[in-house]
Each structure stands twice: as C-alpha cells, then as structure tokens.
Length: 124
Image 1: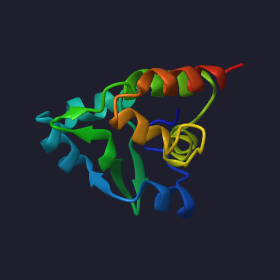
Image 2: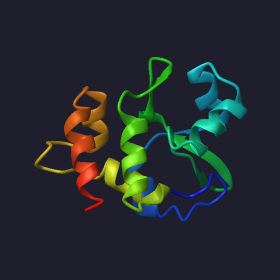
Image 3: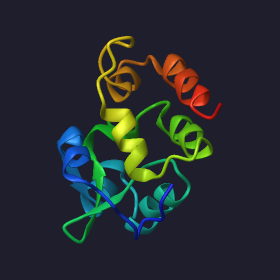
Image 4: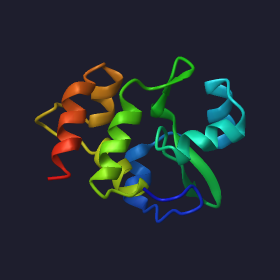
C-alpha cells in the first residue's frame, strides 16, 4: 500500500468512497491523536489518501469510535496481494453481486470472514 503522502486517487474511486473525513476528524472520531491516527495508516489498519492536498480517510471505516472490525486484517491481505491504497479502496467500495453489496458493507454488517477469504484469494 502507498505511504500516507502518496495518492493517485482517481475520480471514480473518490466517488465510490463517497464520504470522507479529514485526518483531524478521523482522529477525533477515534479518540486518538493525529500522530496515532497516522500510525494506524502506516500500519495498514486504516487507509488514508490525499484529496485536494489533504490527507483523508473514508468515513465508512470508522464506526462507534473504532476502526471497523475486520478492516485491518483485510487491508493487510490486500497489501500482501500487491494492492496499493487506491486499489484497496476501489476493491472495498465496488459492488459485488456475489457478496451482495460491497466488501465494506459486508465488514460493517460483521460479515468479515468472507471478505478476508476473498481478499486472501487475490494473492494467488
């Protein structure tokens, strides 16, 4: 995955994600410092990309003051499969009729096992 300073965010992926949070907003929702929130991004527990020069995080990745259950493991598997941050976002937010919905919706609905299985299969 890309480092926090890199981007390559395209309009299609930007639109798929929809709602974004600034790093400050993400840190506040998580009850963490900005420094600790950046560390979550570096550790592939959260994804941050630059939008219009500002480091942003998809709002869907934070629920009830926490990173969505299953997201860190899924991000690690996608990184192991060679996906950068933008490719991971595209995969997580693209609808898949076999799930149904998007992988991120499945994570939000506590159906992470199937999503991690699919992400693991991408590496093969």
